[in-house]
Image (tube, rainbow, N blue to C red; front, side):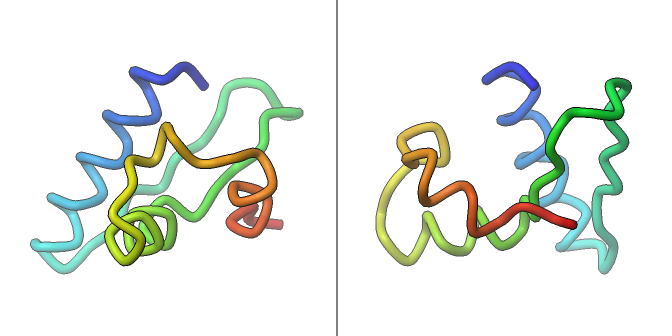
Length: 65
């Protein structure tokens, strides 16, 4: 997923959350990792960072199995 796609999914998830829903992202590549975007946004808000500034180690805790 590109940076642009990531930011778009995060923005859409915020909008969906306000409406009482969520974004169900389905990658086209079966090997692509899926993340819990809502949890990532919450994590970043608490720490005052942007999602794109997260380390790989930080991102790993949000992988959806």
